[in-house]
Amino acid sequence: MEDVKFALLGKRLSHSFSASYFEEKFKRLGLVNYSYSNLELDDLSLLRDKVKEVKGFNVTIPYKETVIPYLDELDLVASEVGAVNTVKVLRNKEGEILLRGFNTDVYGFHQLIKPFFKSRHERALILGTGGAAKAVAYLLKKQYGVSSLLVSRGKTRGNVINWRDVNDNVVRFHKMIVNTTPLGMFPNVDTAPEMPMEEIGEEHLVIDLVYNPEQTLFLKRARDCGAVTLGGLTMLHQQAEKAWEIWNTDENGINLNGYFV
Image 1 (cartoon, rainbow, N blue to C red):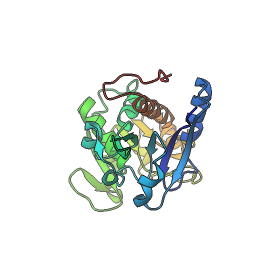
Image 2: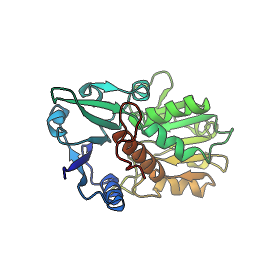
Image 3: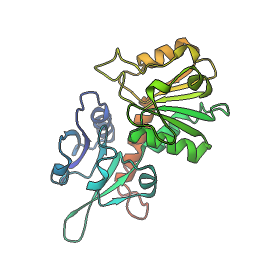
């Protein structure tokens, strides 16, 4: 029986739950020849050589945007978002690998917020400007017509402001706040985005895409202010399941082997 391998591409992956999530899934499905491992790379020029033996891989910080030039194709959503978190490894007739990029963060974030979105959440403040922030902004605009203001430590432009400009009015005006930065992620659990938390109230929906720990310092502070809070674990699981579906579906959308649940 041929081994079937999957991986997570990143730089430092000690915080990640992805490997344990998929290993538990393989065990539950009785897929004894399936494995999922962490692939830590400092240089993406080595990517194609490192993924020759895998069927697919996920992409996390800091490579969701910078991996794109190393791929052969993007699906429509990944192309529109400008970020990739799932890659399917295919082969051409000559046996050469072809890397096709997808974005399942969009799906995962939608599944996370669907039960909690209200009409008052018409403006979103997104902390960060990376690949996850792009996926969140895309979903909010496409699905709900929500305009987003992104917060950056670098240059400001258009709908991007600097952290120092996140004042009382900005926080009060945006009833949805989404942290897409790694602030608060294990092992740095005593860190959190800095902003006027006293302006957060019960009309706010505060979301932290960090999932380790499940309840970050940022969410604890927001909850103490009366906000509805959501952690990133549901999104992690939902985007992983969508990735699994992509890896096990052919070009015509046909399930290749029945291993979906």
